[in-house]
Length: 86
Image (cartoon, rainbow, N blue to C red; front, side):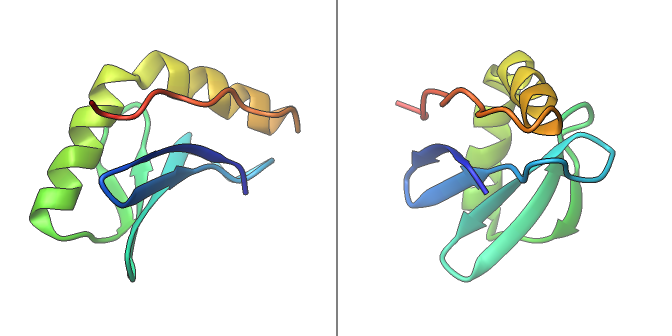
């Protein structure tokens, strides 16, 4: 599972050839969540409120890049790393 970005202890990843809808995986310590790229809603799991807010802020800034990386992963190609939150 390629790592797309890491910031504030949060790791963002995608699986190759994963199931729809387009989404990414976020992990903060033992907390994990699956977030839809189009809706930015948590599909599965949960995170502490502050970590969730940081992930959603980051995702809203990089939605186009996430969609591009989703397409690359679906084609089993290496995704492009995405800048972390400053």
